[in-house]
Image (cartoon, rainbow, N blue to C red; front, top):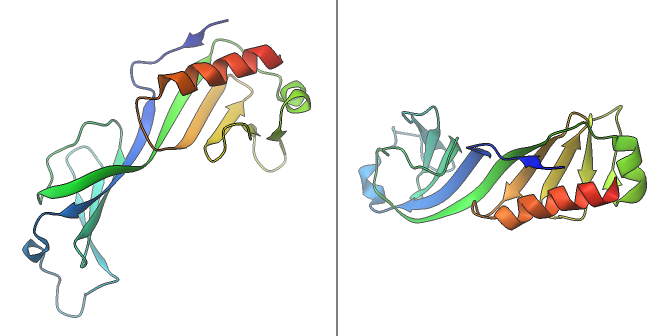
Length: 154
């Protein structure tokens, strides 16, 4: 069995950073920390700017950075999510018997694999696998390891 690699497996990227010059941001009177200003970006993402000079860039669909309203520094990934697909259905009850996992179909329709903690790896019966909590985007070994693990268990 082979995994289907999509052109863009990354579905969401959130960055944290600092403004180069926090004095560029003017908060309205009475709206100082812990409040933030929200700037919509060209690709549907948002930039949250805090009075401390910290900022978050949230909701990116790829690692490509859009034009930002302020210059930033110290850019790091806060979290990212990815999706991969197996080319067949998965019997979640059978998979739950042979691996350390959580499967409560009454609460959530996916099986969560615990072998990859602190990442949240959810396997759905249609072969879709979501990976939440990534700290780096170029971790292809992880994707292949997950596919190999599932194939070896079933």
